[in-house]
Image (cartoon, rainbow, N blue to C red; front, top):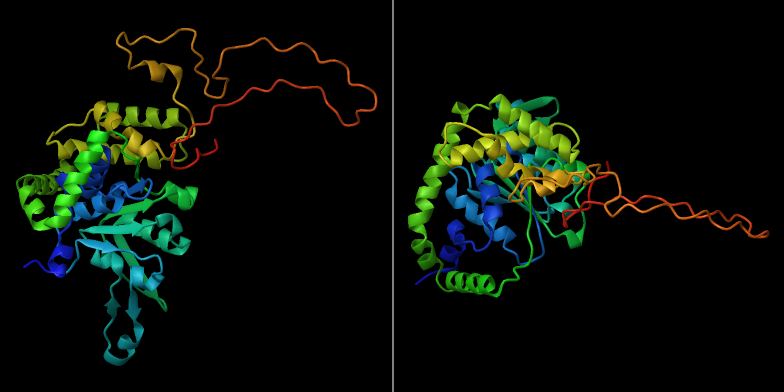
Length: 362
């Protein structure tokens, strides 16, 4: 008879996720190269954000001493997150003891932060620093110790519950915005799969075992292949051009695109990177960093003839509507209307938004 503990240990199969190809790709890329910086998943409640993160754990290599999936509670302390040193043991026993934190337990696994937008700033700062470097430094009373802490960081948030600070938003390498499934057939497929898992998780897991095992092996092989893949100049130039066109701050977007493109090439078993790899991951890296709207040429490049309208206005800071002649001069202000000014025509600027967070100001 199946016990509650046995059912709790089973995660929803990653390959059984329905209608989330972009989220699955982002999670796999971060699993292959944690230096990408993690994935921020934004969307309404009930859109399988935590389910997808837990499902990824089954695909990651992990040691018996490290948990494949670790959750960071909102009420955790800084010591619980990064660990602490037992200085008293140095004085009494002459040995430095490390009390490992959650980042140590998540090594080679998944560290999941639900409602990351509600997490205290001090915890988020420490968390993202470790996720970016893969090294955790524990300091106390002038004594420090380091240990490896490489994990796939996944943060989820509901934008209705508050925004994430812009500087922390930028620290997440990739971002995915989920929406409510509106297609009736897709909702039906989701319901059938979820109900089947709730009724018998072992049966559904066994059904997907033939797909999960090769995918897990692919992730391991892709991790090993990363050092052999180099970035050609054409790939570097393309990533830089996309970052400039998006008006991003700093160089993090460029680096994330390049690492994600390399992880994608490794995932697909190729030994060379192309600009198309950058295109395939660009929106994942730029969606939450973009400050400029794509130009008219960019929007028309996907047309069959590949041509753009020569009359298009490519200035992102100009009016998006048709050009109008300025209105005639206003009538003189009547005497006695103190403080009144004549109307002045002012151009408007179209504001780009991803739907999950407001666009950054240029």
